[in-house]
Image (cartoon, rainbow, N blue to C red; front, side):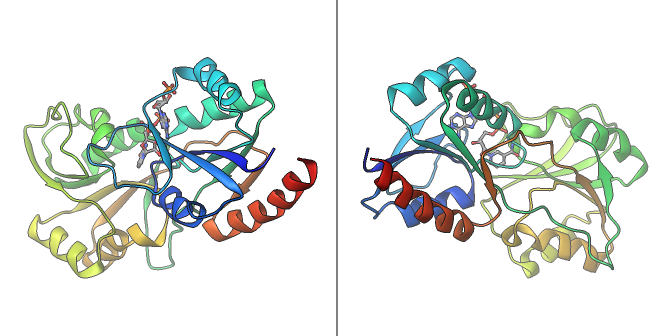
Length: 256
Ligand code: NAP
């Protein structure tokens, strides 16, 4: 069948870039899927659906009903639930699954991060590390830190956390990245931050906070990525995925 029908699981900058490339193309029909967690999502030039599918069974039904040829999982590296569901639903239905995930940040020679297995592990380590914490983990990942005693928290997220976290002393900055180096240095200075807690989201667009922390001698507590399920192919750049898609498009037309 032509055009090829793609389900793009999004919520990331990479997914947005992919939609910009694919929207004008006649050989693919893209349905972008968003979880609906951000209140004012940017507009995309492709058909967009918002909200969960209802677990593995709901996603498997959707793939069959919409005659999807290929699922591209371009969700955030820490969105482990939807990635596991996509792998299971594609396995059940025989739909191919590709993964687009930016590479992790790597520690440079002059950096000394403390690595935590997950958010709970990060929260357990925090009491020894400092008092004024820049918690840059996203509005929906604050709960594990609520039990850490006596800290001054700076929280930055796209939307205000709802409900607000149970922190005694905290300040909120709502902003959408990327952020530049000078602004990150200024933020860390203004709030006299001594510890930065971040997920290892990766990508050059958001690395400025790590560079600012290095410059100011701020301790970095890095939360490691969760494992990823197996997929038919995996790419770490939009360009690499587009090249593979061009190849697959030729096969698809040949088979159609
Ligand atoms: P998650 O824990 O992996 O997923 C929870 C549930 O949300 C899924 O089971 C699914 O519901 C629904 N869902 C998630 N992504 C979806 C999508 N693209 N389209 C439709 N339904 C989706 O996800 P999360 O960590 O809460 O992240 C939610 C979204 O925010 C993701 O799309 C991710 O790309 C983006 N995001 C996450 C982070 C992060 O740090 N986790 C950071 C930046 C952006 P059903 O089971 O009902 O299908």
